[in-house]
Image 1 (cartoon, rainbow, N blue to C red):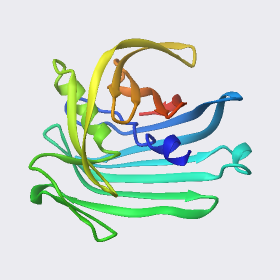
Image 2: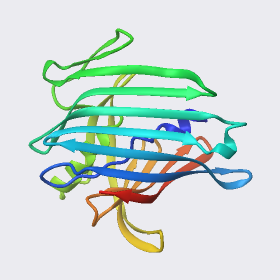
Image 3: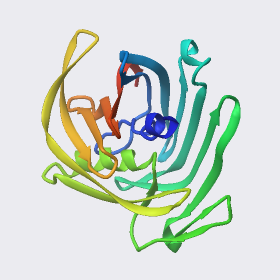
Image 4: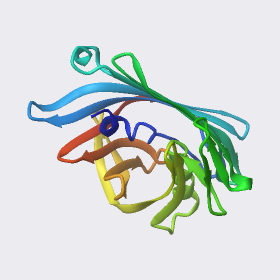
Length: 230
């Protein structure tokens, strides 16, 4: 369940055509279960920008009411630069805990100009020439591309995590109005088939994520924005 819930915790970002924009958002996480649609946790996502350098972090955990049955937390950090509208990632880390026990704890250093990435486990991943991002900064790259390439409907990235490098493709899938805090928001719907993931990104707010929906087997998980600062 932990992988299903928190696989997409890095899917939150904000960007403008010339530079990425600082962002802090609060989100609630829901799961469709036999008991109904349950609020099982929260997440705080924070994008800090200093000139062209960024630090993007996530902090997520299950709600206290669920900790007796399911105590889980995950934090992520992505560091890099925004240069000429491109996200150049240099570092990524993950710490994941279950009932206080560390289940994942790794770092990845990315050398885009040398076409490889190195994990703290000692594994080295060779990549093809071109942009390489991690599983968090990929969404900054997507946001930038959606702003800067409005005529394109598909975006593909080389993405690295602890097991290696893979290609992920994101496709525009129409528009949808989402009601958040009694405000109707026009969103662009984006899907990633490989992750069974659907994003609703605010058209008027630099494609800020409003709603994130992910299927894991027969269970649906949804993350919904409840408050943000820019």
